[in-house]
Length: 118
Image 1: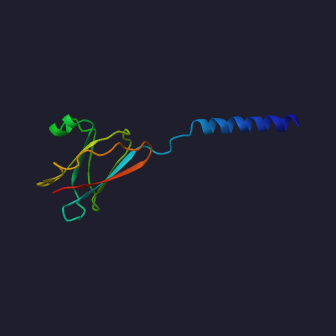
Image 2: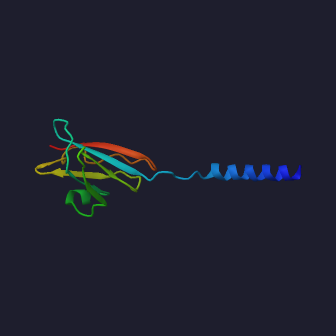
Image 3: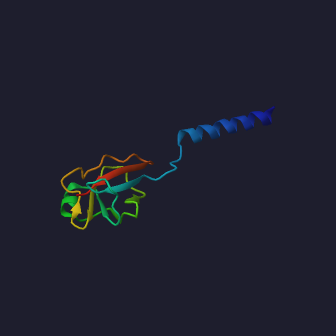
């Protein structure tokens, strides 16, 4: 009886600890899909993320950057759950002048955004 009570107490304590601090299973990420004005995906577009509008306007101090794959997609991993300014360019096309700031990313989630360049 005493042994059963001890095991039960330990089990309750374990479940209370697990419930109190659930582990974060996923890092905050952002998947960017780039499309042109016709809705086609754009391969090889450069993408830069900025934390401030000033850095975005001056195109300096990007916190992360990459280029889209054959499907027009690039995934940024291990980001802070904040709003970012996004600059996308390919040749003479870019996204300046429309929707360059994205909403705050959800912490521990796979966030997605589509950016149109023209």
